[in-house]
Image 1 (cartoon, rainbow, N blue to C red):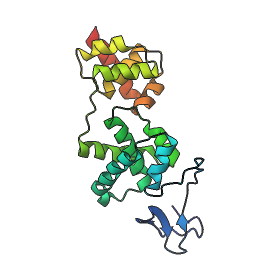
Image 2 (cartoon, rainbow, N blue to C red):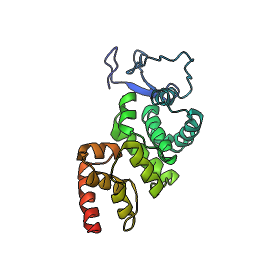
Image 3 (tube, rainbow, N blue to C red):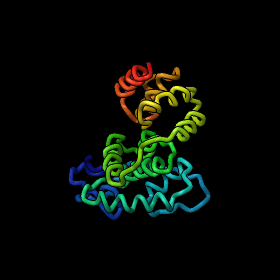
Image 4 (cartoon, one colour):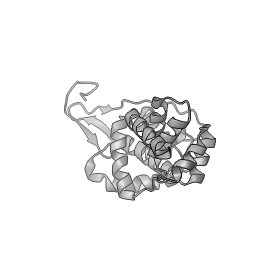
Length: 206
């Protein structure tokens, strides 16, 4: 990305600021502006993560920061900017605490590419060995929370197949009137995967 001031291509990431700085004219390349409506002072430590948690009403900021610090050390040699790391870490934290999160909304809010956040997330999931298996209780809670009227189908599927997010996505598509796109976006996967797995599950249950 060329400098917003002098159009020079000599722009490098400043690790301290976690922003790109032009080596020719010194301009800090600020591409995002946020309006903070809260009366509380903004915590400037890990600004991207702080703003992200504030926007999506995440109260456990200190706990998410702990995970971010650990993740940053692990990813240090990868030279990823802090914004997509913050997106991946918040999504990971929510998943580790059995809460549904939307990585696309997080990415859109911070103006980062979802594909970059997903790439970071894949590395972090492998590093932290995150359990992506759902219990029937968790599946039932998800159905009740999001009005997915297909828990009976999920129960039947659980007898023959492991309940991970792919299984749940397939069951929700097969058991509700939601579109492929809506289900795929909800679980952050391709529509082809949801379609293929829903057919497989229906075959297993017949």
